[in-house]
Image (cartoon, rainbow, N blue to C red; front, side, top):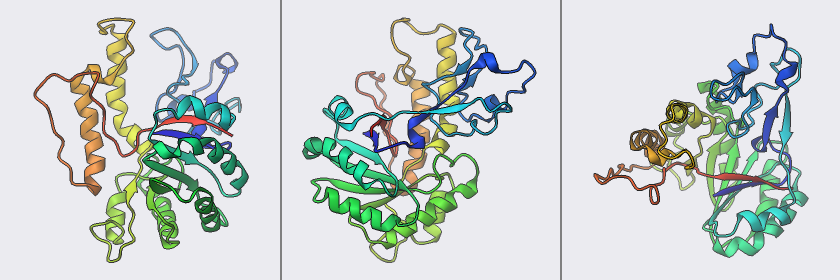
Length: 308
């Protein structure tokens, strides 16, 4: 799956700062508040200070906490017609981030995607709540219908907040129920504020497939920041092995698949998410893991490519 956006979106941004401007006496609250340790100062490996772009996912928690207000966000927005041919070849699933009021922008992006629709197995449209949300989603449906594949309406209840606290899931469930009540063609999936309380909350409300009294139910849950927080120890262990120069070949990219013990830890975490909604048993192979054929299952795997 690849993720695209039709305009500026918090999912397609990075924090930026100039470490030389940081006062020596600063307690560095930005470093402490970052949930993925994307802000570093004098990193032991190479002495780097600043934002690690490959790690930052744009949650924005550092933007308001800087004592001298020097941290800003850098958004990524590109022309759809330029990006689509580069990222959609061979792709069978697309996630589109949009917001209420962007019908014209969404239409331009969809025109760029349209030639690749016949190869798709899934289209997911992610949108946060706002006035006129349901009317907007119906307008999007009318624009893209008919589709030859599954359609998911992803409700972004409280974007990138699942790891903040268990209460964040309330916004996710509330928005999911709102969209579910609109009876849009397709499936409804929760996002934005999802965490370990989400599925139990859905079950208590009779909103899962197993507990729903009617045919309408929440079909899936996308975990973002909460999943990152759980996987952080695995990824840190992976990085430590790299810094300890344990890679067999310095020219080979650091991959989780190269370390079966860490790989299976990650799979176990992913299985916990999936098994709450789907009763699956992980199949462990006694044979050595092949880096060319092994993938990590997850509720949502995607690469993000910004468009406008």
